Image (cartoon, rainbow, N blue to C red):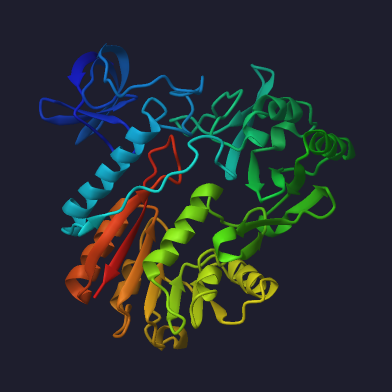
Amino acid sequence: MLNSEVEIDSLTHDGRGVARVDGKAVFVAGALPGERARVRYTARHRTYDEARIEELLVRSPERIEPRCPHFGGCGGCALQHLSPEKQIAAKQDVLAENFERIGKVQPAHWMAPLVDAPWGYRRKGRLSVKWVEKKGKALVGFREDNPRFVADLSICHTLLPEVGLRIEALSTLVGALDARREIPQIEIAAGDDVVALVFRHLAPLTVEDRERLIAFGQAMNLAILVQPKGPESVIPLWPENVNLHFRIGNADVDLAFRPLDFIQVNAGMNQRMVATTLDLLDLKSTDRVLDLFCGLGNFTLPIARRAAEVVGVEGDAGLVERASGNALRNGIGNAEFHAADLFTNHATTPWSTRHYDKLLLDPPRSGAAPLLDYLPRKGTNRIVYVSCHPGSLARDAGTLVARHGFRLVSAGVMDMFPQTAHVESIALFER
């Protein structure tokens, strides 16, 4: 498609530069505010167009050289060309803009951003795998910007080094398997002392393939598991027992989990996030707390160490079972857990009708809107909201302020996913 010369004035929520041509927005991959570039259009839509840089004419002083040789082709990162300090500032701008535009609210105080190591942080992830006959190799990596294609990676600097530095070795391993055409993905799950790989396979593995996988795990000191069907079909190949767990040191809690369970991707940031959440809740020994979307008990059990009682509710029954087990293994008796679809009305469900002094919300990207029809109840005067999507947080913040009489006391961003455009944030509400 035709070239055009554009000036970039801002960033989109997914990290692309925004230009305007004849009043129409053009989203330019890899461009930064203040830059001027000659671009080639890649797609046209009714309300916006998409483009890529053909030639950078004016370079932003904030642009840096990406660390990864695959940046721009791999869809795993969007912001490696921007320093970590500028990345987090851009994410704070996104959060502020969402509060103003969607929620019509602003925090009374902006918290300092929470940051941790910008590289080698991903302890959980899913690598796509595809055997390409023409190349005579297995591609192992994240998807390209076009999700139909797997990026041809040799290295990944955001993954834990135990995996990110062994992408080529994984490619060689898969290419040597009889089932090379039947391996669609490899799940990564790392605890404090074990890094595990789960190989999804669409056809039964031969004895030789199992031996190859075991030999790889032993040589690389990686636990190897296989998944022939759904999540419950995962079994270890080596070692015989794979015990995954991680410790939240400042709360004296150790959480066990299964390889396909949801855990926070960034271990260092999770420690900081839990500590900040506990501080914002300002827990007293008499407090009763409701923790919604509680998962394995990542927040619930640290809260239990400080409060009188905490109730955790989660939609995934397996995670609730593991959360209850984690309470038992940590000797915690003042936490209880319930499995419930939190997007249906629980206005009369016993756990929701109790008195709670404080409420913790950690919803998925869609936010917590359905809950706000019946929660928080009278007597709950402090809410901490942990968010993985600024738009849904802003919408729910507007509801809490306008309909429930809360003030947005403070908010800030957390760099859970450095080098990507994901905006994670935390907010405190009081009334």
